[in-house]
Length: 270
Image (cartoon, rainbow, N blue to C red):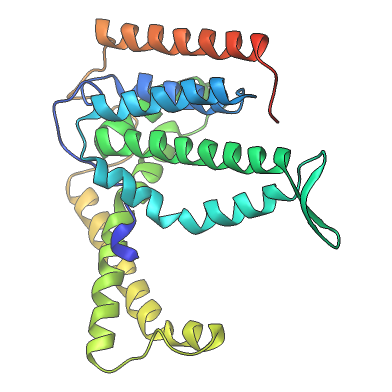
């Protein structure tokens, strides 16, 4: 399970999505999250799902990595679907006490599940196709207006990116520690939930020690390179929007128009 977590991983490539301006990618991700919650019938939701598959195709990232990102939250999707089944209205198809399943509830469960899957896939596409350095620059540029309020934008962007960057590293470290403890005879799979939590103690302690050691080494490396925050710093790479970025913005506008038309013409499901 640890190895299936893909949060924060970057896959180098030269695909269309890789070449986009990271600022545009972040803004389009936020826009798509808004779009997906503006879908009220299966046609508009299908338009969003088709757009997600099209972006995945253009990302030039192996599809199995996207499946791994879904594998981690499959339990959450199942639980959410089961809960939404009982929130439908109309004539019950199945009824047991105060629990009733309706056709509307089934539609709602499918709708919510597809929404979550689309959100996870499109969010994974951002981290797969954008390096931590580009993410830092993009977040800092987008948050630049906050400097008016004397907010240290560069430091915030740096902390966010470092945290995202070290997620795969810490997950890999956790997997190694668990394998080492199992090789020493530790039992982490049998017993109840309390026993399993106690069995994680030999994993968490060395993991925290390793995390603090890595943080200290990173701080020392940054100090040795004379890092003193964002004041007076120049950039080796200047971000510029290209025709590709404007084309992607136009694609997003067309997607929004399609969703609005579908919502106006067709009846709502939820």
